[in-house]
Image (tube, rainbow, N blue to C red; front, side, top):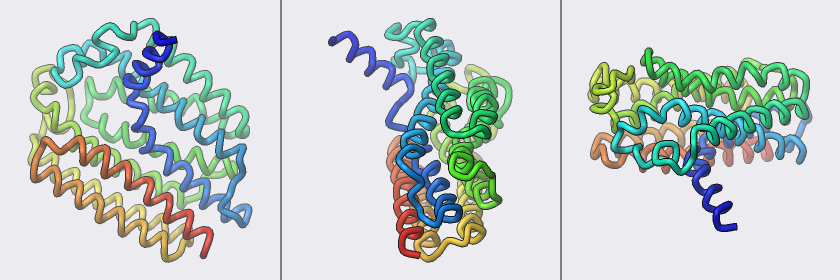
Length: 291
């Protein structure tokens, strides 16, 4: 029993399971808004609630597991990542590959139980979220690919509820692309020297720390703009506007932390961005209940 528990902990560490908090709020934001418009109520039902969680978790497990599988050579040469389970022998390459296959199959199965459009889109989604592992080896657009991977979450949420892709969810998703790419730029500052040494195509290794921080600020400015457009085009009300304002404040605080001390990147990355999604979801839910 102890071996099973330890292995579960190892896999949880492999995919950094707690970081699921980034995608989950936004899939539910889209589901709440879509359900309000289609069904007249923000509650989309227990079935879709469970399927939404399963879809987000299995998709992310696949993406992170595949990334760790592909990056085990790189991670072994990086002092920050050399103790990860994919490098230190706790999880074998064969086990990681099986883990990816199981989660990919589970994601497709979940999509099957959602609706026909979700099933059609399931394989393209897996291909997109898996491609991030390749892009960093030849293109600095990898940061954008990571953003696109998480931005697929609200689109999947809307498809689950209404089998359509309305314009407002595109705006929400584009905002997520810039949000994720922006904080991934900051997170990548930790590996700037290693990326240069290994010839990886991260923006910090190519353009330097100062330009990277400036680009991250621009991305997060665009995030706020697109989320504001999402609120307008989804015909949301006061609390949705408040959600955008709070997000802008939290993103500003994130840049303040990083500009003061690079060692606080982890705090800025996980704490600030994790709470941002939760607060955004909370205010959107209240907005759709009371307005």
